[in-house]
Amino acid sequence: MKVCIVGGGLCGLVSALELAGAHQVDLFERRPIPGGCLGSYRIGDYWIEEYYHHCFAGDTSLLSLFDALQVTDRLEWLQGSTGYYVDGTIHPLTTPTEILRYPHLTFTEKARLGLLTLRSRRLDVSALDGVTAKDFILDTLGPGIYASFFEPLLKSKFGDRRSEVSAAWLISRIAIRSDRGAGGERLGYLKGGFRHFIARLEEEVAGRGASIRLDSPVEEIRREGSGWLVNGEAYDCVVSTLPPQVTAELADLDITPVPYQGAACMTLALDRDVTDGIYWLNMKDAAPYGAVVSHTNFAPLAWYGEHIVYLASYFTDRLPEGFEQSMLSDFCRRFSVSASEVHWHRLAVDRYAGPVYTTGLRDRLPAYEEHGLFLAGMFSPPNYPERSMNGSVLAGQEVAKRVLARFPDA
Image 1 (cartoon, rainbow, N blue to C red):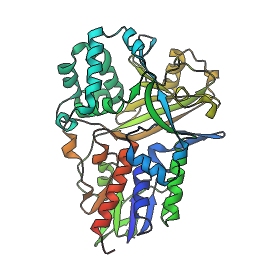
Image 2 (tube, rainbow, N blue to C red):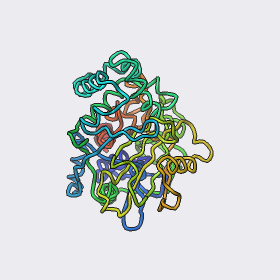
Image 3 (cartoon, rainbow, N blue to C red):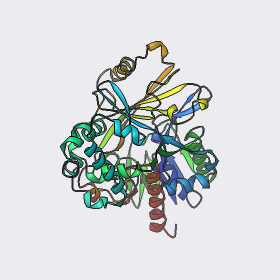
Image 4 (tube, helix red, strand yellow):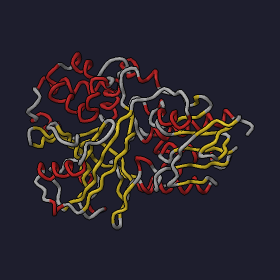
């Protein structure tokens, strides 16, 4: 059988890995590099992801794939520290002592927040799908914690749609980040970057006979008899890993859309640390970015020879004019960095960086097969109620199983 896979992100590559060898597989990727949101820059003699990444101990499918591709020897378990930038001041929030010293929550509010974190892994997130995160926090923890702690985080992540986001997403997010000790979160990263994982995945897919077509955007998917035409080329089966509404437009089909938002992530390099040793610094103060992620306060500085920082921002529809310069200028002003100290900077922009987990989304997720097309990606059930590399691996494997079950005699 001749199979077309649309999209060369992690989900597309994994589905290609599962189907190649058994069938003829062509994978189309619009960008010149594979990996999607796991794409990387080559800077001098090292690689660094366009968007910050780490993995978790519970990412069993991802870790199994690391084993299969023989990259587990690169896996390092590191400590991720956190903080909050409030009124121009950096507040570390990693150790119990630092949390107790944080001046913007009362002791009682901190105790309530700590108890919720402990309970988060036991809560049934499916029961929270119809409840907004705002209402859940107001009812469970009170207005003080919502206004001073959660609302700025939700605003930086989801903007004007923050009041629509479900408590299922929030509790899932808290639960996955609760694997922490006195030194911070226990997070995984590959020495040399996740580029080595994507390269091995690409190599294995090609080794099984699949064709990976980079710089090849799909412009049309059209039904032709019992098969499909993709950019005019005939296929028996199509797997699309694009957002459902994009697939619907390409194929002129009625597929329920999933709300998405864009991401703009600036990566830059400096000679010095500017976040007081903190890896993940959330911004309460208004800024063109919602978090400052100091990668080399997580991964060893010696791997790179310069301090690497990400500025994370989300948007709907399109970025404001001059956004890149306003983001960089704000960072330099706020953290007392002169323009000459910035060795280099890059801005990655993805209009469809991930779903917005609005209330009721669980029941609106598209099936793996719609109108004879196969669909998988960040909108698939394994990525609900929070997307992850592990979820994308599972989605790629699941859609491949359905293709094989649908065409058992192919």
